[in-house]
Amino acid sequence: MKSIYKISALLLLLVTVIISCTKDDLAFKEFLKDGEMIYPGRVANIITKPGNLRTALWWNPSPDPSVSKYVVYWNNNGDSVVVNSTTHNPLDTVKVTIPNLKEYTYTFTVYSYDAQGHRSIPIEARNVRVFGPLYQSGLLNRPYNATNPYVVNSNGSVQLNFNTPDTINVNTIVRYTNTTGATVDKTLLPKDTAITLTDYKAGTDILYKSAYIPGKGSLDVFTVADFSTFPKIFTYVLCDRSLFSEVRLTGDAQTYESGTSISKLWDGSVGPQGYPNIFHSAGNSGMPHVITFDLGKVYTNLSRIEETGRDCCNNPDRFEVWGTADLTNATTTLSASNSGWPAEATSKGWTLLKDITRTDDGKNAFTSELDNGGKPIRYIRIRIKHVTTGDGNYSNMSEIRFWNKQ
Image (cartoon, rainbow, N blue to C red; front, side):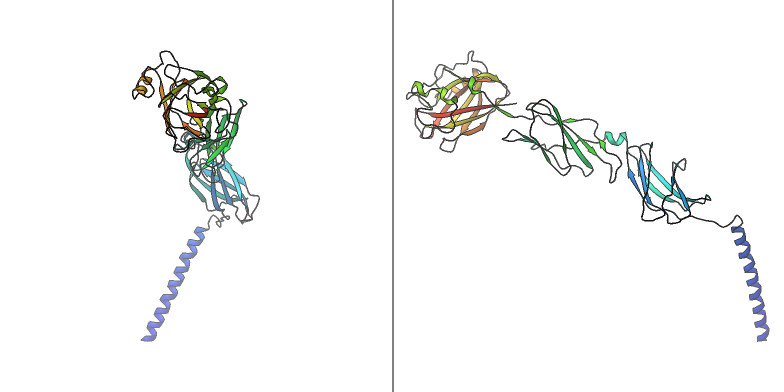
């Protein structure tokens, strides 16, 4: 009985094998009815390079020696470009630039082809952004340092300060007028936060324009459409002391003698001077007292004073600087020692430019910034309120200089 079962099982297995082989053979023949499928080797490591209404694709070529060309498709295979295969070394790089694109995001598909027209499995570069006018219109010039936009150096050069730029900033062109009147362009690099103009012409505009790339390896540089104007640069120009002259208004302090007149303040001496090469007030002037002089011309932005005291004594350590453009009806009637004098001076058209307090011995040159309130100034009154010795009559000074900001 066992033998009959064994024979039956063997017959069943043999029939199954024969049937199975017949089905697979028929299916394989059907699969190969149009011939064997051939797939040339595809490219590797495709990367893209952004550009202005164009892009570039770089890849390592297929090592398959049968590959004769590559075809790049985009716009749902509606557009294409052919690249001939010149190398099969996978360490080389094939480069193709695709021009005349729209500002859009694309998918590019690359196929390898052999001479018989067989093509490889595709490789895609997705979300490839192409840049253009829309991108450019959104670019802004690199911001300057709003807290400290510039520094005017003692040698006359000007340092322009900028904030740290975006990582895609390439450069910023700074355009200015030099001292000869010529237009000059200088380049501020992304790594620098300041640029110095050694020959800047005071009072002229400074313009700047920045350039950017949309990404690493960009084919093109995009420049901001328009220049921006840098904040107005003011430089200090020393007032011409050859134009200065004495003025005596009612109530002004007298001088100790003719050789110690107010004009000693602009005689060109340098540093604290000794008697008689100084201004020396008379012994009956009282304290406070006032002196007046003419700068010789109207200054629209009188902005700085430097006062130098005598080499020994009676140097002003508290004094006011007043200014006006016109002496018509400018004479005060109250004594400078009267507490109402400042109010009367204001009513007469005088502007308090600075109330200065010195905490040293008053000898060396002392510089203060003035606030002209936007008013033009020609005539100056110095109201001396106190001297370092505490003397109630005498005041001494060696030099006074003024600067106009322009």
